[in-house]
Image (cartoon, rainbow, N blue to C red):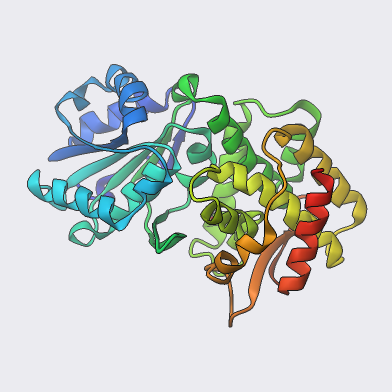
Amino acid sequence: MSQRTSSLPTIVSGKNALKTFQTWLRKNAPEQTVILCDSNTLQHCWPVLLQHVPQLSSAALIETDPGESSKSLEIAAYIWQTLTEQAATRKTLLINLGGGMITDLGGFCAALYKRGIPFVHIPTSLLAMVDAGVGGKTAIDFMAVKNLIGTFSNPVSTIIDPVFLKTLPAREWLCGEAEVYKIAAVANASLWRTLTKKGFSPELIEKAVRTKQRIVKKDPYEKNSRQCLNFGHTIGHALESAKQGTLLHGEAIAIGMYIETELAAQLKLITREWCVEMQQALMWRFDTVLQPIDGEALRHFLVHDKKNQKHKLVFALPAQPGHCHINVVATPTQIQKAIAAYNKCMK
Ligand code: GLY
């Protein structure tokens, strides 16, 4: 089986997604299938997958620890070693069953093993369904910097089935919502209006995914417009690295969005009204996550952000609703001023 023989759409989403995948697997029977999961998805999601796709019962399993710390060179080496021990070939299909950590790590390992083997993402968290599992980004962390080593490599397909959300912990759920708010704020004003009027509901997954797909299709390698999806991520990634795993990705992004909205207002890139509307919406939904932060602790990690150009700190900041400014340079003083304003609001 190769990626070319696939007749699966890039994204299969909805209540019958696993059924569609099962039918495809039956027709395209891969030579060998390996499932990558973490101990949480092994316990909660693997039985669900097996129930819907019983022919996977003979697949080999590779299990990692849950959490960002598994996105490491050591764990990648362990996965490559296990694939080698299983005599995996270029026709082996790797199924990444998990949240953003598993889709990033599994995609990375599949992209490099034997110069690339086919892989399918089955995201089990809301965050991986709407963001990490869509658009072909893969990565591991390196020297404590998030996603420092990675590739753009597309899965055969991403299978988004809401059945997995039944066991998703509330904290993880909120992380996924943060990415939905991000996509809406910078790329879909009507989705933003729905979120602020009615709140998030699983029916909005499809809308968020289609919006992200539209962005990725236009700029798959993030040369220009795709950078809008980095809104909240310059501060967010630095914060996540500085907090050494105590803050989840989506939590850091919620804080990052609040501060970067403040920065956009201070740089006069958005009106104060839109700034206040966005910050109120973020405060309303992410009040349990927003907390004062130590701006000084972020300095080192901000310097290593992949988006930086010629040692300048670069941001994707909101413009009018549903639009974004990319390649915005901000000075360390401007950033610290925005963080200080945020910290004041959190008192
Ligand atoms: N997570 C942002 C992107 O996929 O571009």
